[in-house]
Length: 285
Image 1 (cartoon, one colour):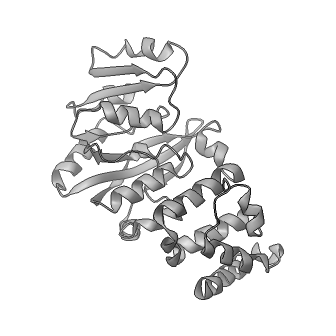
Image 2 (image 1 turned 45 degrees about the vertical axis):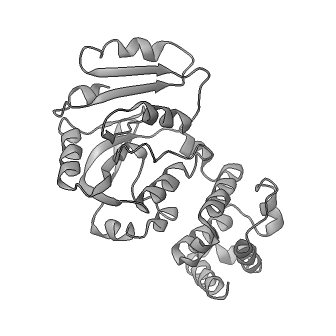
């Protein structure tokens, strides 16, 4: 909220949708109501992530949506102006994102700048399945057409699924400056879900169901699923079924696991060997 207060660009409203059980958030906002327009909603019962984000989008009246998660903040007083300028200069783009810096314990440990190579990758949004080149939702500015909502069945792939869907329908613009600071901590959903079979496997299989098996024809996507199962120690379809809510395992995934299961895990952990085996599997799938 403090980083919003100092913004030079002032034509905005702030919407806070609150899942917390206490009154602390609402009391805190009283410090800001005279500084800019603040609209507060208490979710009773709590909606959870990402339904809470969708509630804020639903209430928004502005032309653009600028999500700011509660542990992220603007890099400086000109950040929002840079987003507004990008929207004005690229009036054929409904999706804008910027660079960012990751902070943990008050220390910046990574700066990401979306350069030309990243922008070329995003010409095929499916590459986001392998690498999230955009980053956290706080880095984005999205046209408010009340059509793009976060899929509430997901939490691990929620951002990349949303980005792919948006980019398949509109043009994008990348701002090559770190305008957002991202706060990282071990209590975040992404940290708790990483390498968690019961979270990652159902969501990536749901992503495959939603987008179709055809996305595996993209070798980057195929390689991601190959590495996912390798890293989680899934060696066959039987091991996968317990995480798939009794749904059928896609045929191409069965073929992938059958091939991967014939290779000793010790060899699969050797990067070049795994990559060669993946490529052969993709060719004969």
